[in-house]
Length: 349
Ligand code: KG4
Ligand code: ZN
Image 1 (cartoon, rainbow, N blue to C red):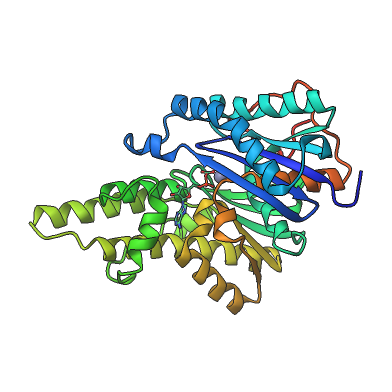
Image 2 (cartoon, rainbow, N blue to C red):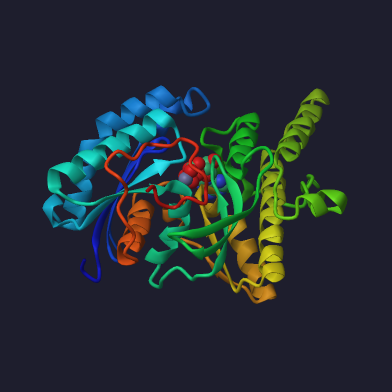
């Protein structure tokens, strides 16, 4: 294998049909076709709609990515694809495409973990992913704190949400404030004009026995309910809901808890580096608070550019490239798509 393997990454775990191409740690293409608009009127992702959209978008997205990167498929050294976790029918489209390409081109195929890919994308920022590091992974379906000793084969989950994921909370609160789906980016925008200290929303699992029992875990469902109650009360009293203040105060509560626990983990477990990843890591307040608190605690913070935090194919290619350069075995020809692939399995055998 060359020093800088040319790797194609395919991502279809949710509503983005995404293809990325990297040469070692260099990003050559990051092409995304989203079916988000088709789901918006349902207020959430409809799996069957997502699968069909992937089928239609796969080949054109692949062609666009190759054109952007200035490569043709036979130039590739390997193909990586999200094998899980995600929507079963959506994953199958990407996995089938990757296997077909691998077979037709005679190239190795690596089935990789979507969550580990969200961390691996940090390696495209100009310097390799620091290992060991703590990672805070916050997306629409997951909120986890991880100890990453080796991104390809030693990831240990130390904490996770016990109910809603952080992104899920953003999406649900956006919905009750009448903002469009997916809600995270809209809350982020509306919150710019609000007061983050206007309403003191609860910080789940941060005190007393809850903190002892769930030191590195998160809970966002109480926060979501608190926001719903506050808004209901406001409406019941005939007052206009101060949307910007609610959004800013909610966002502050989420960012506060995430950063507090991530920095606590670094201090207690001796990690010098913290990597943020996943769609919620695109949040402007989470990014600025993490910068401030990490600096105060002497922890080096790494956050991918916002466009690389949300789902993309470059992150899958980045993990594939790391696997190739470390001499990992490609996945078996018949590896499955696993909708609930655990976070500690970075590569399918
Ligand atoms: O990682 P991702 O693109 O897909 C999953 O793997 O789930 O994350 C999507 C989630 C959604 O819940 C979306 O609302 C949230 O990330 N998100 C944000 C922002 N951008 C995306 N949440 C808060 N602020 C943002 N700027
Ligand atoms: Zn994701």
